[in-house]
Amino acid sequence: MLQIDLHVHSVNSGHAYGTLYEIVAEAQRKGMTMIALTDHGPSMWGTSGPVHFGMGRRCPKRFGSLRVLWGAEADIVGPHGEIDLTPVQQERLQFVLVNFHQGCGYQDLGTEGNTASILETLRNPNVDAVSHVLNPQYPYDVRKVIRAALENDVMLELNTSYLSQYGNRDFDQYRYLVDAIKSEGRKILVNTDSHFIHEIGDDAAVLEFRDRLGLQDEFLLNNYPQELMEILDLAE
Image (cartoon, rainbow, N blue to C red; front, side, top):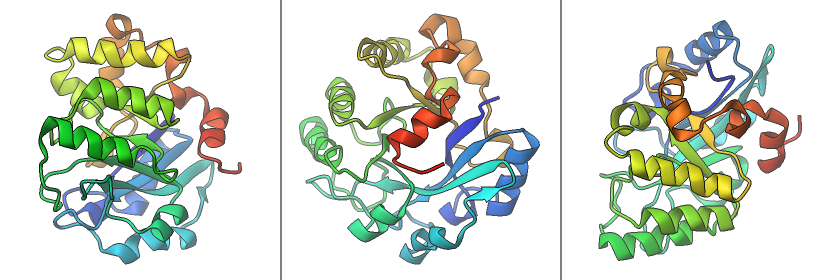
């Protein structure tokens, strides 16, 4: 079981099925130490409006021993890396994931144009991580994106939802992702991208691919809460 899971969707995403308090209760039941609520940005069909992302200032930062970060999985919506949260909203969030999502108003520019767009996004100092790096909904040059993320100190997510589905099919890409991060002396962030509460913290896919991909505990950023808080510039 992951002790930290920073990609959790609630009913506020429009296509997930746990409330904040149900999610917190499940994470506490599993003995987790930190989660991030990362509902889709307001350009996603069915998700919450902009006001939702400003309410984090009123959400408790802790529920007992569980720390809760108020965040978002923002959508890239413009050719120059624009995302669907204002700069003020971005700065008020504690954790911001980004990637392309279909149906959010982005115009597909092909592999070259999409790559240029997300590279601009990764220069945004408010962006903390790339979600489902290897499974974008518009094609981009994965290797350039991985390299740019490392250069800009943006975390790279190993998404267990996609790993469980496509880990064997896309094994070489997953291997490249892991090796690229290790070569820089960095750690990878494992997240579940949960949409149902039973998925929160589930590390079954990590255990399945642990030896083949080299996903030993010391390589998982989830096992280093203090380091993670320093990366996010958050106080304990």
